[in-house]
Image (cartoon, rainbow, N blue to C red; front, side, top):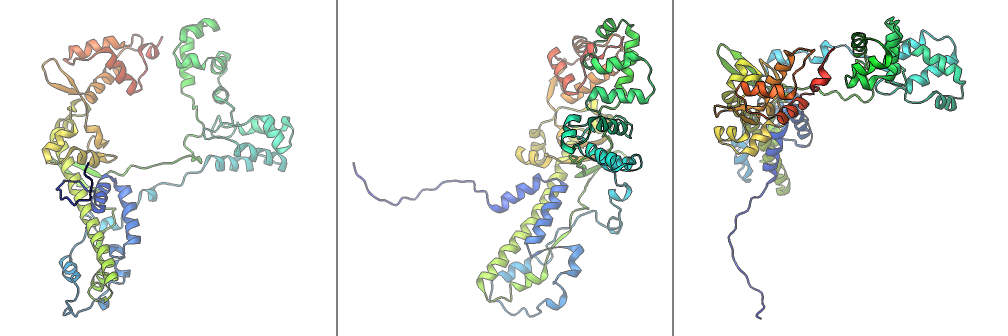
Length: 465
């Protein structure tokens, strides 16, 4: 066997993900909130980037600009001068938007549940001992407003008598919101029944022992065990279902992580046309810092010049990527309106089947680009706020050979259930037959699947006696 070292030339094709391309893909995936955070971080690390709002405070004033343009020593000068006017501008920013009040300006600060209870405790108890016990109980409440430990545990931890702890706990259970301080769901509901002045002892028995039967709508079983009529049990269950199982609702708790949706675009109807407005008015308006741009022509250090040139290229690519994201998002929404025009005119039941490939072929982009452009982004429409992914629905065949979207079928199912008789709710098979009569070929299992996705209980669970 012949072995040796040789040099061979070969030509191959490779797809290389450059940092710039990776950044462009990342920016396309960002929604408005994420993009704002990303831009703010780039403003901190890249001296060439500056926000127009802060331009007056930056070192790019006229006295720093070198008017002497005779020095042609560096090749970067032509690059810098080429992009004198290169900037990114948000298209909706104006004087009115600058003075626009934020959402927080119109909302009051919510009080936390524990602070709300501490205030009531302070004006109710008289002794330091009861105050100490009450504070410990309030601090032991969980996120639902229930007491997360037993009275015996509290007695061991604070070295107080169980009788005193039970007395203070009963006092806290009279506080607002009603039901707070309960040790379980049954006790929470019974506290609320007592506060409403319910005298029927059967209501307390059902709340204590038959919550699972209420959840499964076993009204007849409860009536048989309590020896009362089905109608009476039904009325008691209606009262119990109106009670609040989570007393902390409406108050801030430690685990709350509230995220507000900021639409990435708005669709408005003007006469018979739909207008697309990309919501970039809250994004920082970026431009290139002229002070550092001119510094490239003045430095004699090649390494420093190369560093500044790299930062300049990075900043220009960022601005270009943001603008490219804006145009891509606009084209995608424009294509969605083209395919789903009947939805915007008529509503959910008119939603057509649509896949990413349809939009990709329409605007001449790859499916992966459409997926990134629609991922996690929302649009405000005349019909409400929707995620862009909502408009892409799978297809079910109709008797005439055409297709209908799964979202439209779900709307049909919900409409049939809303119009059904509560004494004789429609079974999944009955719903299937009605849909087939409407020309939609669908199986009973698919109806059951869609009903579960919409969190609609089965017909026995929906039945009223």
